[in-house]
Length: 145
Image 1: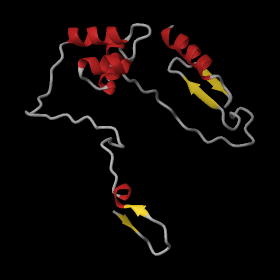
Image 2: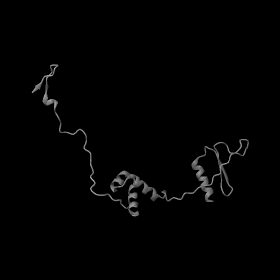
Image 3: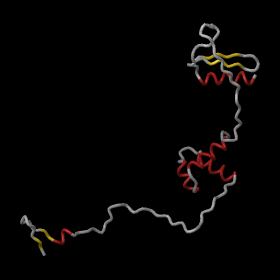
Image 4: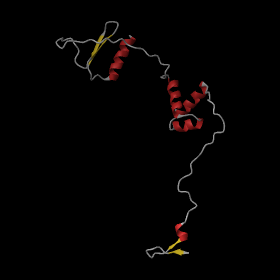
């Protein structure tokens, strides 16, 4: 049956109500959890094995984490702790004295300079453009002697 609009064009009623069996959006994956999820406990040997697996060349950390059902953040935490630079690393502090020097004092450090006085009486003065890696090496040598 055809309908005649006011402007004189004819249109099939069947064509205007046409639908398709195809879905326009991809189907979403839904996971149904049927029980209470409990916290898993991993032994040190299990953690070490997973970390070693994640350290192999060409291996994706995300793939290893998914394979074992853990998050990538958890895996990176295990890697850091097993490497030894996790929270168990001892922290030490150095005493710092701030001195205000007069501009007329020629022995005063320049603006932006740092003076480090070690307990044995050694003084180190560095400018603001000091190479951090070089300074760390010097301090390590002085500390270890």
